[in-house]
Image (tube, rainbow, N blue to C red; front, side, top):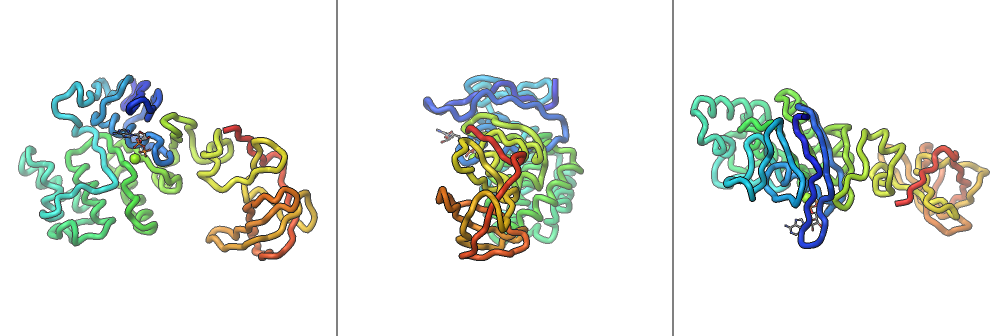
Length: 319
Ligand code: ADP
Ligand code: MG
């Protein structure tokens, strides 16, 4: 049996399926990201994994032990499996140090003291130990929440879109720092998010969830090159529908701009988007709007361009 194992878990609210026959096996110390749009069942999944929600069927095991849901366990939840939410749940009237040590009240004093010191150091919070939560930035508050969760030395850490309230630079910095920390501590981490880019900063081990079902598993290269659904394809880039060819799409980077070619189009707009220059073009015959890359920034609104693409680059996506 693997270390953390979810077997055929399903859950409905009223008659609506929130999670359908979800299974997963994870080794100790592995990182996993579950990516899905809002309402795809991510939070439901994490709550069931943490023993905080009653599933309709299926089981969760950590090692040999079954994780019991609130129906089967008097005090719900486990120290071994900690869930961190988007809103930090810090105590507002006590300082950083007390927030972290509050969860360790029932532990031996010396141990608790050492543990708090270690976490303050690891998360770079030493200089903020005397501050109240409201005197911290969003990123610092999130670190305190993570320190609180890590204080009881959980084996599994479940992150429920915890970086949504941070700006991009803060977020990227924090994810990089945490990744190192989790590695050091040997924590097994499951991170759910709607943002593929955030997921990839933590791990390339991905599960894509749509309407409560796993639609695809794999690394980013597999998912980008062989997406099973349009939703998955669009996580990586926009896709352009090919006129008169059902279910066929091509990515902006795979469209070549030529002075001669198959599709005549007019440039509607040109935008510089950091890694490339994006052109919005309108196909002359079908009237469709496409987005294509113009890496050399050769074209601008009003220009005529011809478009072509290799057959091998066409994505066929029926759903
Ligand atoms: P996500 O975290 O991916 O946004 P959720 O797990 O929160 O998705 O929700 C999955 C589905 O279950 C949604 O359709 C949501 O409306 C529904 N749902 C979640 N929690 C409840 C609840 N307590 N009562 C009724 N429906 C719920
Ligand atoms: Mg959610």
